Length: 374
Ligand SMILES: [Zn+2]
View (cartoon, rainbow, N blue to C red):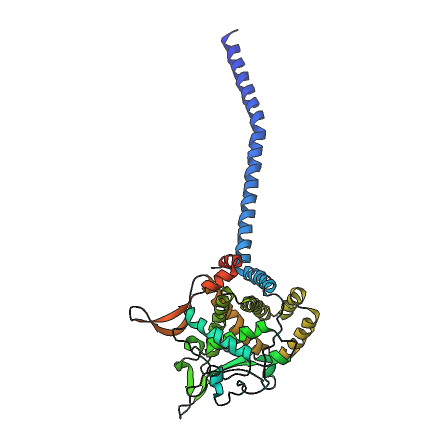
C-alpha cells in the first residue's frame, strides 16, 4: 500500500465515521428540536394558564367563596325555630299586681314579652364582656311593636336613643303574627342588632354627622352616616351572636349561621344586581335554598322591588356588602373600630376595637377557608 492509497483510505474512513455519526445523531437532534418546540408550547400554555388563573382568582373566587360559605351556613343554621315570645299584644307589659312598681317590676325595662325581656338582660352584658364597650347601656323599653304600612314588611326593628328621653329597642311584631316570617333565629339577630346600636360610638350617628336646624334640633344625618353605622352594627352583631353561641345558647348558634348566610347571600345578590343579572341570583337561590312557598314569596317580593332597585341596592350595600367586609376583616385579625372611648389600665383613653375571636372559633374550619382571602 503506497502513501496515496493510505491517504484515500483515511479519507474514506473519515467520511464513513462522519456519515455514521450523522446517522446516529440525526434522530437525537430531531428529538431535541421537537422537545424544544414542545417546551416552548408548554411554556406558553403554562403562562396562559397562569394568566387565566390570576384573572379568575381576581374575578370569580369571591363569588365562589360566598357560594361556599352561604351553602355551609345554610346547613348549620338548621330549621326555622317557632317564635312564641308570650307577646301581650299591648303597648307595655307589667307583672300582674305590680302596677305600682311600673317598669321596676321588670328590672327597669318596660316590656310586653318575657322572651324579649329575658334576652335583653342576657344580651346587653355581652357588650362589655366582649369589649365592645366599657359601660353597658340598657334600653328603658324593650318591646315588640307593630309597624305601619310597607314598613311592616321591610323593617325588623329599630333603636331610638334621643338626647333626652327613653332609650327604646323595638322588634317588629310581624315576627309573631305572620307565620311566613315567624322565626326566633331571625328575631334574635334583630334584637342583638338593636341592642348594639344603643351602645353608642360608631353604632350611632356621630355628633359631626348630625344636621341641626336653627333651634339646634336634629333634622337630618349627613350622607353615608346610615351606611357607616348599620354596617358596623351588623358586623358587631355577628361577633356577639358567636359569643352567646360559645356560652351554650343554641338559638344564638343558629342565629349566627343564619346571619352569616344572609351576609354572603346579600353580597352575591348585590353583585348580580350590579352586573345587571339579578335573575341569576334568584335562579341559584331557588335551586339551593328556597322551598316552593319561599320561591313564590321571593318572586312576589321581587315584583315589589322592581321599581325600587336603587333602594334595595342601597340596603344590600349597607347591611350585607359592607358588613360582610368588616366581618371578614375581623376574621383576618383586624378589630372593628367601635368608636367608643374607654380608659386603659394605665389611665390613658383609647378607642375600643372589637375582636372577632368568637366568630373565628364558631366558624371552625370554615374560618380557615375564609382566611384564604386575608
Ligand atoms: Zn340598624
